[in-house]
Image (tube, rainbow, N blue to C red; front, side):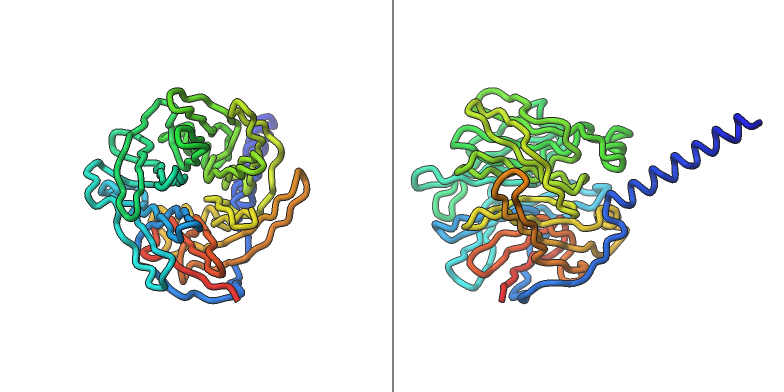
Length: 347
């Protein structure tokens, strides 16, 4: 009898510790206080503007938009890539993929300039699996070039060009469904990864990650930054000459970091989810809003960095921020599945 009681006591305490861990590690107890030194200058009706990349040279942005990411999926998601001219104040998105007939639900995107044109890579989720679609952009004309598909794309989230032929992409999960995915989400098991593609072959270059999300590279310093929202960290790697990655350190961010973009000074700007459990309920359609947060990281060297909270909002203006891109004193902020994305202006 004593052994029986001891077993249930241990089971009860273990369950209590696990529940406490999940709540604490996902930011459930964080206080959400609206903060921003500036104002919203425009809301743009474009649902699920999950990722945004920018050309400061030619003053335009490309937006990855997919409507209806709420789970479970009733109808398959459809979306597109949109062009936003930053030389005017109209900020009217132009659909670049209206003629693209392949099933298209873009997620993370990356853009690189090649001579006078741009190459865009887009993570795509379809009923037949995951792909990376590559396009060329000439002016405001987008042309599909190639589809990449491989068994290494277990659950691709984001992609970043290294040059016109090669890129890294992140897989946010090892398992797409079932108990494996549940354990990854709630326990935070570190089994997601980063894959390198050299134009012909795929190779894993980083593993042991909990939900590998946004990825970007500082090409001046050969530093790769990877968001791990489940652990509230940004992982820093050194890119080696053979394109393998050497882990440097984790930056503790205190929020569910998502996509990573750079400003003109090389600072990291990251759209984030301060409360992951709240966000999970929002993504399932059980809550109407989810808080948004933007942080800025000035990374100088290992152990030498600062983190600044730029923006926090309870989700009333826009829910579930995923990306923050600066252009002058403007910040373009995207999201998971809100009907609108917002443009902020700093004071």
